[in-house]
Image: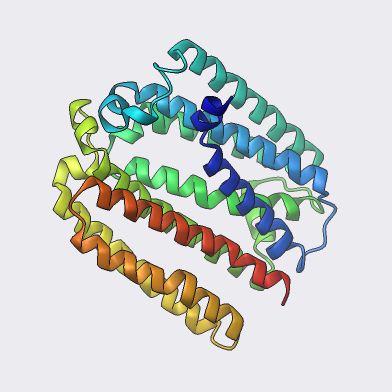
Length: 307
């Protein structure tokens, strides 16, 4: 049981669920009253988590050869679980997630939601099978999927009161509430870039196994030092984004204090340590550091609940 939980990255799934829950109850609920019940939300979350768990498994299946080199102590497919059993787990979780997503899409009058679930499941498979081996494209896809989980909750909440006939109509109405939409977009951008930076750093960590598997990740194509420069440039853009956000919330002393202490300053340390990193342990620490910053970023949603 413990091995299976590790296989599906239960800690990451808990973070995803926390993100979904805080998006609904801390960001959306105080501003938007809908008929999207707790049961509806749990079913939506279950569908998202099932597809995400399936994505982790199919990724491990395609990474059997690289994981032998990159992380043999954390390899489960081919060691604890056979490839065939892994495929069964993948198909069961993905199908269950699609069924849950389709059901909640129909009951919420958001038929486009079914296509979103199918798109997410397809994207995770294509990432594992193909795009992960291509420089930057795979990193962008994963980052987009993570950021989109925040928007999905908002979309289903908003759709509960309306019937959308096409994608443009759905997006137009979903983002009609400017104040709430800005918060949703801000957190989505934050999640996107934190994930993108982590994915690029993980590519540096995994360069030996990826090279042996003939993958074309960014560190393999342009080298570790140039990849670090690319990460630094992206980090500077994120830093500018954070400064703009801090400027916008300058009149909220609690929020600006929290964001400065638990997000902005730690991110400055991340940038500083990025330059001196030159071993796998250094990059592992940077990856964990970003994950902690992302966690504190998501937790900041709680502050809007009590405004």
